[in-house]
Image 1 (cartoon, helix red, strand yellow):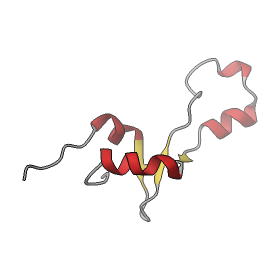
Image 2 (cartoon, helix red, strand yellow; image 1 turned 90 degrees about the vertical axis):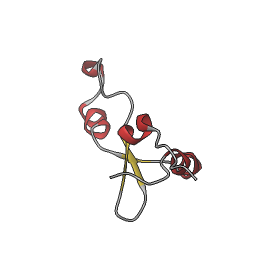
Image 3 (cartoon, rainbow, N blue to C red; image 1 turned 180 degrees about the horizontal axis):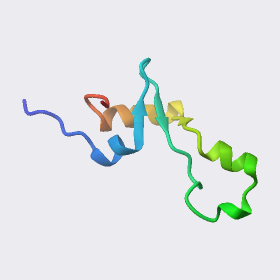
Length: 67
């Protein structure tokens, strides 16, 4: 049976923690930052956990996990 392919676009967007959870970047932190409060900008700079509903799709897209 041939090897499964990793979806590289997903692999570049998420990281897997040591316990197997997935972390992602937050949306909205690229531009138009002057209209956002300092508290909101700080929060946008932090990673967020991937929701449990999306984890199944991630595991299918990353059959061998992430490095």
